[in-house]
Image 1 (cartoon, helix red, strand yellow):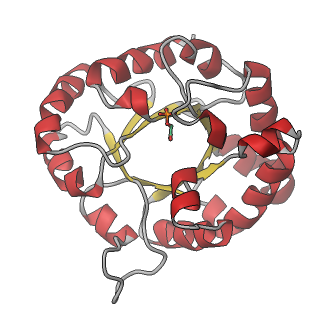
Image 2 (cartoon, helix red, strand yellow):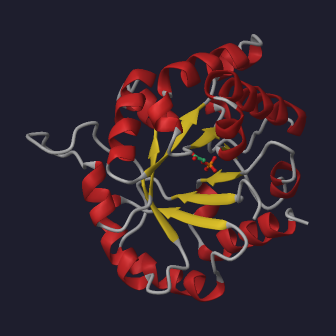
Length: 253
Ligand code: PGA
């Protein structure tokens, strides 16, 4: 078996209601987990319903965020244990939209990731630089800092997924060049190797997110150190997401 299975994750963000699950039945009929891992992160309100439709486990499910403690008086929050209970296998943490709108820091991301691991969820930890940092060649410094603070050896034992998502590339139809993406991913792999050893570096999947679409996916998914994709806009319609799933499968050969 290959060391790192490729993974494609559809992040629905704050989109989707029960009626949108009709579209998901189409997806469920057409996919299996045979060659790659296929994950959807619907809004938390749909997780349970989603899980009910997913009888053959053709899809893996993810939350979009969780709280850092197990339970208690935190009105409006959702715990990792609740996501797990609703059928999730993964949870996205530290997405730049949360870092920006809710002032989430890498320290908080580490606490959330620790709680997720404790509850049996695999964290998908997002890192990425703002346009200003990109333009002033600070990308690797930003990524290094985010990785250093967001990860620890306990989290690494769970083989988290690391998602490189340049903030300026999200929903903008702009992406870094394939060479730039590969540079950040191999830098991330080296960071993991230096801090946590070869095993961690070989087993953690480093995926790219930010304006992935059917026109650029093939190039991105074929890069050496790209183990998958985190897809926003192009995951909302089953037909678009299916196209990206096919492109990822083709990138295996
Ligand atoms: P996008 O979003 O594919 O719409 O750019 C990606 C993300 O925010 O995870």
